[in-house]
Image (cartoon, rainbow, N blue to C red; front, top):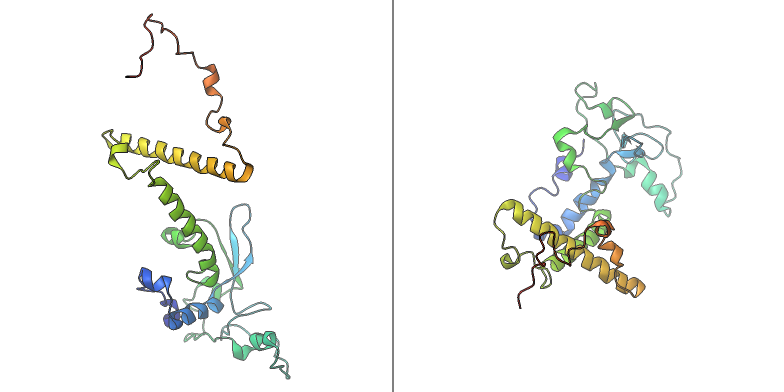
Length: 236
């Protein structure tokens, strides 16, 4: 079991603390990595994954009294080799297990690995993430995603679209407002694609991106209607 100090390293942190981690918080977050289950087998066709105990295998990251120590370490240790130092049992954290009878312990403590399928975690499923929270790997991905989201938010609230301006959504009712916002977001997406085409290919977004060809079969409404009346004219 991961020590409570490490398990609760990010509990109660506000946005400012997560953006600028102090030395103690950073050390505790990094110290949690050896305790995480190892990915033994990637997602299959059903998106199920196989996770192994961190104290078993050829490259264990923790020591556990419930697991055999395996092959004894070599008698000689090259202190100039970081790989040998890291692989030595003395360099790994040791789990504290008060009950070695394996009663009441999770399945991962009674077998080598477990299978996690979509939905197995129930209500906790939404908290699953491939990258551990606030680690360097998580930050490298989150920074890019956050920048992209903020950029899109800036476009949606810019002067060309501005979904935050009530005057752009004069219709009443939740349904009408939802449809109008969806149309405005679609327009903003087309603007983004058009800007990309100009930057990447030196030309505007092809007209086929705006028209799926359905208008080719629609009747021509430019002339008189079936009632014999001319189409309505735009006010001058």
